[in-house]
Image (cartoon, rainbow, N blue to C red; front, top):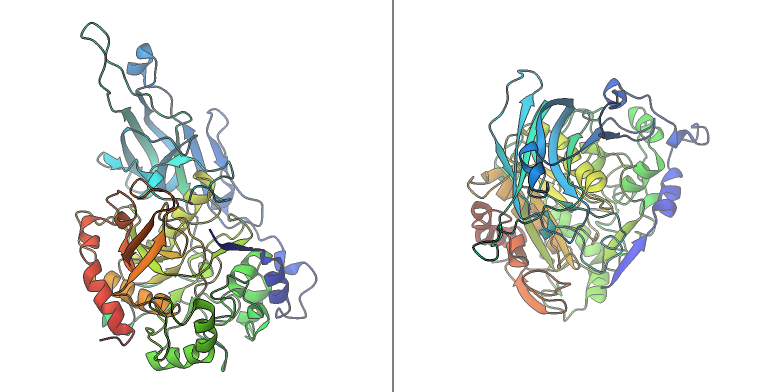
Length: 529
């Protein structure tokens, strides 16, 4: 696997050059005051522990509760049923179950119910998907073999809650003879319930209930106080590190951060990690911007022309789908940055990892349920991010992008929205691909038109940067999945569902059925007939 590892130290140093000169040394990483929600009490009378960051961290926490054998199962060895009776817990909004061995599957059912924080009503029982192993970093990668990765269920968004009850039951396995006690499957070791408090929204408000830009037929409302300035005049659409995985050259030292007043204060308050995460998008927005503004197709094509010859040389003029004449690319959509949705950059690994290029986009649903509003979507993302990193042991959120039910597009894994960032979304096919999650569960529920429109717009732009036809095929090499063995070369759609590379229900039956239309719409956004 060809990939490159980039340390943000140089990027952050370059970013520091554009911070206001009046800021005293070290102010960029100065501690912030801890809010009340970040300093709540820890357990002292139970084995649970509350994972917290230092005094400069954004609000948010994870309460981890070990799942003991249920009383009814202790006489049988305690291996077939575990859980917790109803109990009060610290406030949380997202939950999931993790265990020690990432290679071990949880063969059984996980049922949970929660108590609403405000009404104190208990929910009905809900099922968690125990098939989290189908996501994650490819085997043999540094991220996968770091020794921190755990097995996990899909997370579930439940909204603000302060009580929980959970039952985990193994599936009975066939036994021996009629006179013998039937064998019982043992649950994985180290089962824990993870209760995630995503913390409060960032200083700026979250995205409003907006559609997917003008293409969705609705006005997109920017978060209050967000930066509305696009890339500096004359700047290229992407950095010179697009196809090589380089750290972006002078991206951090370009005209980013030229704002004054509130913008300057915002930049001065950034930590080194925040500056590095923002600087890799400096070709598109000011340092510390909460969004990357959309461009028209003409503006996007003009920017593409500035580096078109370089892209052809890097990807090969004869490569399948490579652009040789007309710049087939969709208009750049509005993208809410990590800073816009409130990512705590201290959680993730500091370095950025890149793959060589992007040949395909894998579409997912987050599996977190549909019980969220679009104003809550940033909180859902922060919850997934914390669950992926603190609970599951990943280096960052697994998805490269996310889309909410109102069509808002969000930057996912850090490293730059235009760059080929190595994700952890489709086990076996994270190399040379990008992963896009539509927030929600879409097996029985129809995905909103705003979300599928945003999916078409995002793929038209992202695949267009690499000269890929959304209606075409991509030839990828499997790194090992339950569908394709390691090293097998596979021809997949340029816009594929997760289930195309792995035996899984993801992205849900109803969303998967929309991918044919999405490919057609994406190609049209690129100007193809």
